[in-house]
Length: 421
View 1: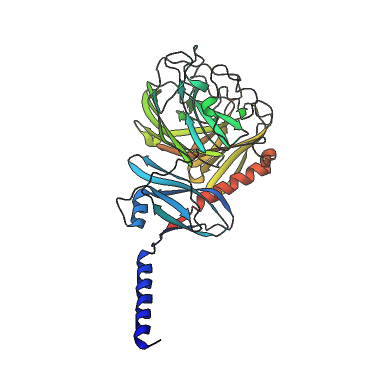
View 2: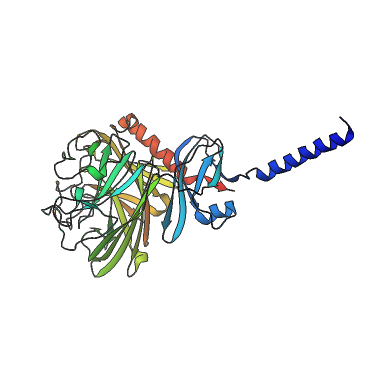
């Protein structure tokens, strides 16, 4: 090859190399660091939309999605919460793992992902046996517990994931009940409809697992006022709204206006979040009114079906775990119930009187059969309520198995995934 030919070939190689560099896609990455020396499964991640677009260097980017470095798409959803858009994802991590997430965009609409969380309020407004799936609702001030014909499917609002389901009675009881699940499918849309089996009997999907009575059930709300325990009962107005619902998490908001306690009137907002793969839901409560700094908000765990009226209390990092365990379901199966609370905000646990039983029709009935929280005074309360049922997972056939799950969750709360770009 003469020198002139060599220069031609060399120039061609340089040109091709330059074109290749220009066409090569620059990866836009986010890094997620697990600082714990344990594996983490279905770990919740929240990314502000503004942060993601900053990573992309494109404020007008559309149809954003996420992949692992080996090209596997990561389940996610885009939600707008109180005017702020954010992406919610779930990832698995090995102990100490730093994971690289690739941020991508597509000109085509993204496929819809399977839901692993769900919120359901079915309302038969026309009393014709057809329950509409309500995304928002204003509760009828004249609606009473146990009213016939049945206005609300399952008596109220349910939220579920692939592990467990919960519900709140959408009447003046405002109690919290639990669905024990034996399936990862979303089932609340089809339960409690006309001509369907009773959800109090074990079905292929599971069962209404909790006896509530006059207790606080699975994390219902109350207040300590002048030394007395007052449940969140009748209010002048109550509204429901779904803030997010999808493959990764669901969020609902309950607003209660005109809660009369003594001579005072309060407004209370409760935001409930449930994530895929978790046995707990998170409750964020804020109350407004006079002298809210002196208010003691309360939640609790029912012990109505617990033969040995005892609870365990342990500390894990900045959190206190309070739990019960035993054959305390409607079917006398083993189940654990728990609260995860900020240790700094908890004074002690108190046991309500064990008087009366059965279904509470009067939403203003005294609270009974409950271990409840004596919290520090203030206008807000945040907690997680968890359950573990032996028919959902064999790990919950023992108290130690249930406690192990709770401790693991509490430790993760103290060491959230570190997000960098």
